[in-house]
Length: 224
Image 1 (spheres, rainbow, N blue to C red):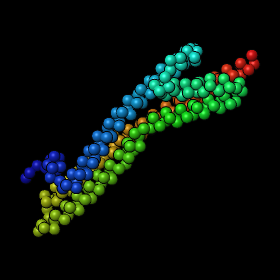
Image 2: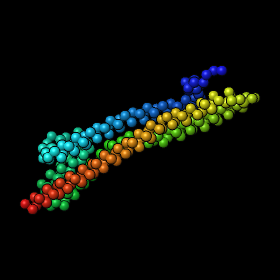
Image 3: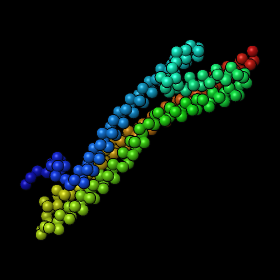
Image 4: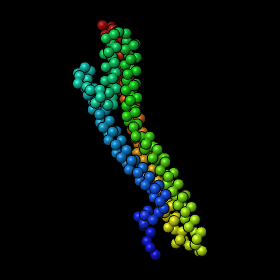
């Protein structure tokens, strides 16, 4: 009796099953590349947030903090606060009324937060798609393989387990591959969505704190 190995089933599978396996393999590669890229993005975003928060609350003047800031190089809370501070200085040159100044600052920071959200969520829909579609591709391959296995029995006078087993194993192999591709993608997607929401909440809280600082500054100058 010949040993039924994984590679033997792969190479002896039908062309259509091999095509589905190739699709699942490509999905797995794309998924893991996206997972590592997102891991690096979120790790850097978290580190940048902690470093900027420490510098911001160190007592340094805002003009000094953003003296050499390039808006195209900063991300996260630093970019959001810089956007608000830039708008604050621009509008304050035209009016001393606190309300339009703060409205402009908050609008500018909301836009920056939305752009940061797009940056953090990049590639996450791809992971969600791979995680949801891969099991269905595997199931489709299983159904196809079972149909082919039963069709092959038409020319056999006596159906035994030894005859049916290779076809069934080949059919179930695509389901296993689909789950192998989907499970890491779904886990990573859920983890990164939670990390993204946590960072965005930190950004929004930081923006609210900065708005409060500017509001108190405008009131103090108005009183003086």
